[in-house]
Length: 323
Image 1: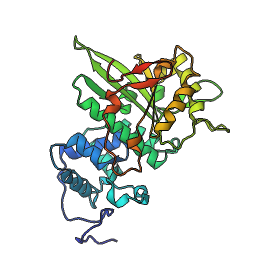
Image 2 (image 1 turned 90 degrees about the horizontal axis):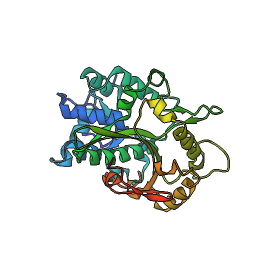
Image 3 (image 1 turned 30 degrees about the vertical axis):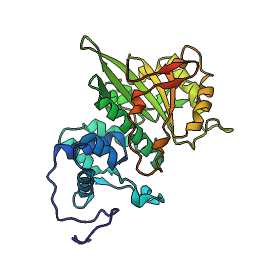
């Protein structure tokens, strides 16, 4: 059995500490963020929950939450393989102990826990750095929504809460069955935005997102179902037959977002989107976010993802910050 020590720990250590943790609302905020968004950078957690303080306070708190015997979060090993790992923001993920705490304090339901287990299970094989990119993009969008009092972010788990029973009980809750030769559509992210209207009511838009590291193929000579060319007709069919709305139990408009970290790919992606029928093409939006490349040193969230226009093939640019 390992004996607790009080010696100095490296930035990568999850070693023992004698310092106790009195769980605070902000600790629970950190944990819920990691639960909903996946492996996230210290800078994103700091900017969202504690921007008025120095970043060092956030950094120290997360390190304490990672230390044993607490172990509510951990630092995924994959980040150490970067050449600049010792100089970049630490990336944290939530542990089962952290999820236990969220359930105990009523921040999430047992059903949310089950959905997340499925999303990180055998049916969804997502590389670590792709998950980090998705979390980086989520952080940018959520920061922009937070700063706009007329907007409200709707997480994937909130969407699943009001989905039909077949979706809620599925082991693949975000996989959409296209009812055509066993074809399936699996987005990288699902979220919604509520837009407050003049009369106090809310309008809604729901988004399915494809996050491109700049290394994924636009077109592949052999079919694997995950290239952009292969996904486009799947999304078109899903929109044509209202399969996304049926799967998630929603009635508001659905928009497909594609973000790439390679600015040079935007023209190619737009060109491919021109193959979509005119009546559905306005719902396909594309933009580049090169500064969010996961291997860059500590990329900061970019709220402009929400507040500046997106490209569309053959249609005017679109601003998703407005209903």
